[in-house]
Amino acid sequence: MEQDRGAGAARGGVSMLAVEVVVAVLVFALGLTILIGSWTLGSSWTSDGPGPGYFPFYISLIMCVSGVGIAVQALRKRPEGIFADGQQLRQVLVVLVPAALYVLAVQLIGLYIASALYIALFMALLGKYSPVKSTVAAVAIMVLFFLLFEVWFKVPLFKGAFNLLQFTGY
Image (cartoon, rainbow, N blue to C red; front, side, top):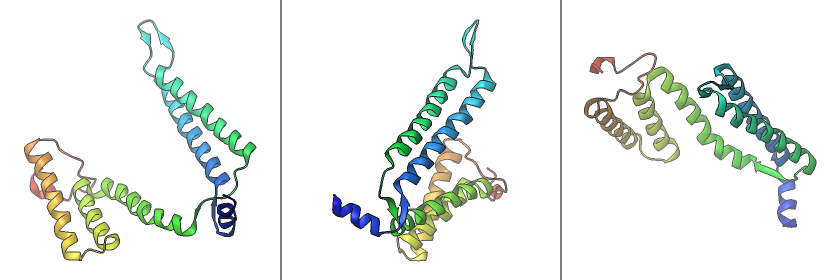
């Protein structure tokens, strides 16, 4: 255990304290956002029973208290060591950044095309598959999903602001 701390202290990276404080702030911010939304919906007890924001209000209140509790506990204990070193963070970012870009791409070009691009690029860049195999697999998967949802189930999925699949008639 002492060797781990010694090795962790020698490596650079994000500290445990910073991660715990950031998580506490995020939990509190999410709770506060839900709290304000539920207050707007009506978080009180009405003549018919609880208002639409009644339960979310109290859940979000618990989240806010939990966020404060996490922050206080982290600041009192002052955990030592690092959460992740630079190499570990790089591995996480290699997956996280494309996933964030995928979410943005879904908003612009829709679920089908964004997913095909995501699958093909992930297979080619991270999986080291050939570009041809990656492209064929991505297109085949998304054509199958298109047929499944749009044609057979008649459940239209989001096609994005630019709807590049408009030529299909769906």
